[in-house]
Length: 364
Image (cartoon, rainbow, N blue to C red; front, side, top):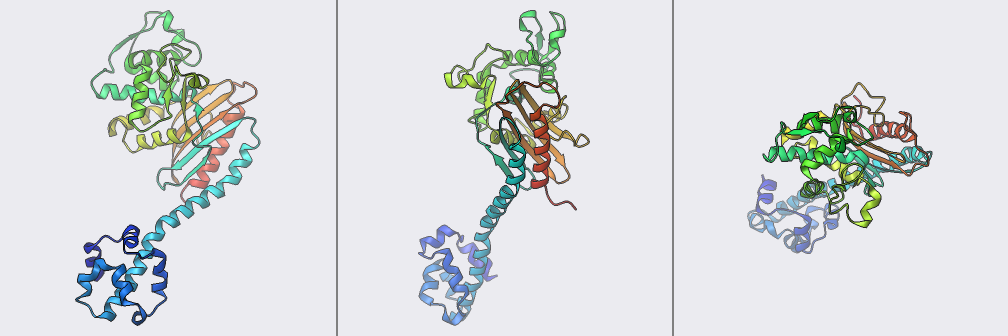
């Protein structure tokens, strides 16, 4: 009761202790002293917040209370330090196996991973600016869902496929005849499930690249930007900058992509229902040959991207040891390899298993 009354009287924080010219480290000194030896002037100066209550206590009882409070404060202030130490241990423990895998790869690797259940993280160049390839389509999807939620577009809006709108690369719409009608939702589904480039451009034509970037900015993402349509045209303001040209279709960081996945998982993007629907869409992606390729029985929400010299995989695996979110970009590869056994895809598979093992909760 005394402790509760004291805490209600004045919130005890490190800042408050400093205001009373009493360093938290000095609590250790108090703990080493007997109650009778505690200097009354110091205790009243340091814990002046409790003076009204102290006037109702004997000197001995008040000094005993100070020792009890000191123990509580030490426990409270040591929690962040222990958490930081634990995170440092995980980073250090994962560094050796991760770097051992990466050292065998011909190219550059940037990654960020987080257990969304425990908060444990690991990064290797997590804040590197990287080209997105098709993973930027996650940002396009977010803007599409937001536009429908705001009543500025409808999933049933009609889009028409023409010869001029067809582009190469991934997808199937290029095989369909001119004049095909499809809905706005059809195009978004094709963009995410098959990474269809033509469907992506149809969606971007409705939204604009600048609107996609504005949405990312509103969500707190400063680096995630769409530069243009696939294969050119419809440049955003960011895309017109000379320093942005080298990123191609889009730019991000592994850290920001994992943060976006976490927001989706928490139901914080557009709405809880929309966030869930977007993740369900990502769970249906075809051709997931990178992250967790061996864990095909477990549900995972992913988006992949590929260029001649780059592979990018982003996703969440729903594992018994935790929901693990990972973003990996492998770039600067010396030779193109468009098989499912591209060295970057194999590396991502190995790294995702290492990260799952290192960041996952202990097995029962």
